Each structure stands twice: as structure tokens, then as C-alpha cells.
Image (cartoon, rainbow, N blue to C red; front, side, top):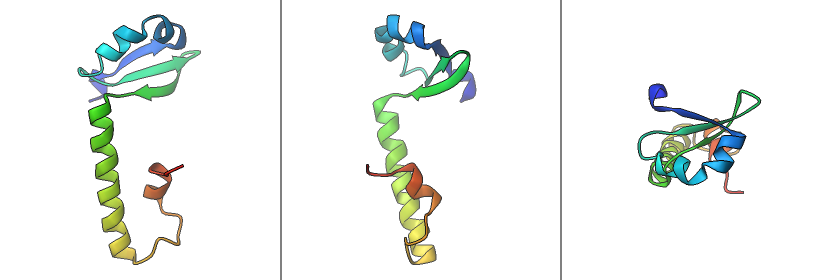
Length: 81
């Protein structure tokens, strides 16, 4: 999976946005700022599947602990705000 990552600098991502988007079916893209990863871009279908999976995992987690009053790690990932 990590071998499928492509890296673009912010400047490259700006000038080659159309190309960047067209490569998302082949793997995710990491956008770097000053050589440090700053953002990740992924195919929308993959994003929807990932969010759906995290919501299912959260449901299982809540069934196990019985409450959502504790700040659970899954909730911080899929906040609705």
C-alpha cells in the first residue's frame, strides 16, 4: 500500500491538479510542504468505504463499552463537524 503512494509538493499539486486527480485510482497521493507530508488525497469511492468501515467499527466499539460518553478514538476520526 505505501508503495502505491505518490508524492507531490504543494507547488506541483497546484500546477498538476488534474493529473493528480486522474492518478488516484492507482493509489493515494501525499502532498508535502517543505518536504514534510502535509495532506493526503484519495479516491472518493475509497474514502466513502473507509468512513463506512470506521462507522461500523464505532458501532461495534460502542456495543462493547456500552456508552459514548468517553472520548473514544474512533469518534475523533469521524467527527461530523
